[in-house]
Length: 329
Image 1 (spheres, rainbow, N blue to C red):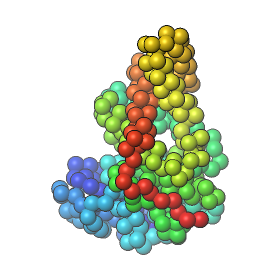
Image 2: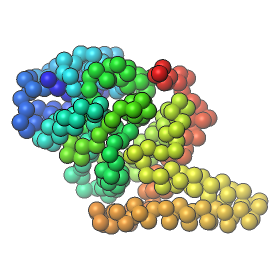
Image 3: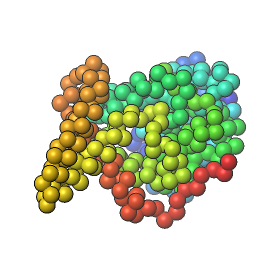
């Protein structure tokens, strides 16, 4: 049996559509081939009632964050394969079978699917371009080190043996990255399954996008304190995205220095020019994927780099009171 685990906090507006997708999977029988567990993470709305009325198992806990909720679901699960998605995702009919297919290879311990969206807004379309660009990178790699839990699966034995997601992460952030990085560090094989598709509502506007990127920057900086090698790269993130944070920071710092030391202005200009040039491969991809989004792409990459940089700086200035600890190896 497969166990599908969905953490949910005040998810009444999206959970029904999510469960409709999960409960209608091609070639699989709900209750026979797979079970569904919704973990209500201290909701104050009708999340638990919606899940119960749709016939899935409901586990409840006081609010502790999605990492803790997923671990709770894993402990309750009966399946040998643990599959995760989020309450604001809608799995497509072939989703579960695609993830299952990765595990026909006995070496595979975990697998990752993809996001798609049907939204027409400019910002959601840009976000989809970002994901699609990264998926293109993942597809070229034999094994990966980066699994997001919107469409993910792990062998239950491996998941429990290594403690699951670090519950110290209080909000959706990089708890899924940290777990997959930890497994990859220990030599486990992780697979990319582009046929395992879930539909998602991406960031609706620039402010929402910037807040999400700030949070990622903050929590990733915290994570890098015990996984420092991931500062140099991972299978999901293009190297240019890291350089853009550095280049934008250098450009801003040099511009400030340039107020009193005018030659520094040239450093600022050259750094900004390098930032813009580093976007050419991404812009070329967008031109072939969703060309009308090109007008928005450069401003959004500036927002992305600035938000990530500010999140990283804030983690240095004001780290969380309790730092996650790495698994003892």
